[in-house]
Image (cartoon, rainbow, N blue to C red):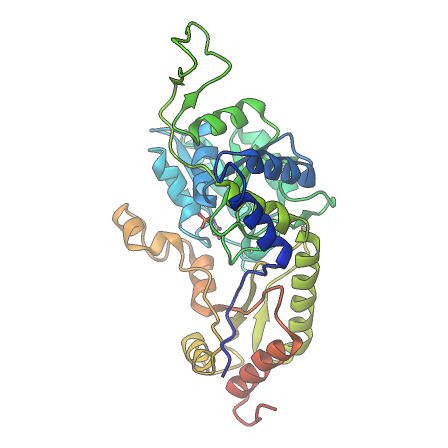
Length: 394
Ligand SMILES: *Cc1c(COP(=O)(O)O)cnc(C)c1O
């Protein structure tokens, strides 16, 4: 029986040729493909600056550093995310805290954020950086967040690892920077487009872009010569900051530029698959997440929640039964604050009840560009067989 993954990259002959062309060229890293990929992504999003990175986590880390997050600072994010959304704050020596989610779409709840900001202001503990996560590819309510950002004076990094190709309510692409300071993407193969490993930060803040570009390559500058320095010779370089090796290779960048040319088609197909799931699953005891409320989703994930009022089947039973039939559904996410490392920092289960309830019932059905209707029908039939024990899968 053919296994159906929950996600999978789609690579064309053109994608492969683009990588081969770089392999046959003079530079396989730090060559011209990086700048070209940055430029095409920057234009696609309509943003001032783009900085390619080794992965999405590196992009989050450097975004937080570029916005000045440091020891003594505070970063807030969603507990319903991958651990990287929070870890980037800890990398900077800052304190991390969470804001509970709206169960309708799994995104940070703006009401909870506002309440927490009111309390934090009284206590003199406002966050320096807030990291909303566009869960499953559904844009957060950025207009509302933008108001709060201006009222309370924090910076915003959009963790758009799920949302490359999504757009806001006003139709502008996620990444345009209209509602935040920096937006980060991940190009891991499970995401909406891929460079194998890879990530990018987009911003309209020239100084932040420059800082990220320097930090991604050890904090080293070559030109222009920094003020007050004189070159000893053509070999001279200056380490002006404590940076990292977070560079993307030209192989990855060439793949990314090639994938980007198909991004719109990727997102159209993902939305069509989601619409079809909506129809085919409508009568099953599953709750769908709200989609298209604050823009157009990239449909990185198609998440459903088991409705315990309408079925005795538990999420664990359903996931195991699907796996037994070769359907590799996944669960997004184990709330970050319940991870052992975060419990050690003092977080307790119960602290963010909506994220915890989401985790108890949610699972993610397969969605990927090359998924066929037959594969989707198999997923639906399997679910029907598990959730309606009386009926037989076709
Ligand atoms: C994938 C992902 C990341 C990290 O991206 P990498 O490229 O794997 O480092 C960060 N945040 C979220 C929400 C993600 O899904």
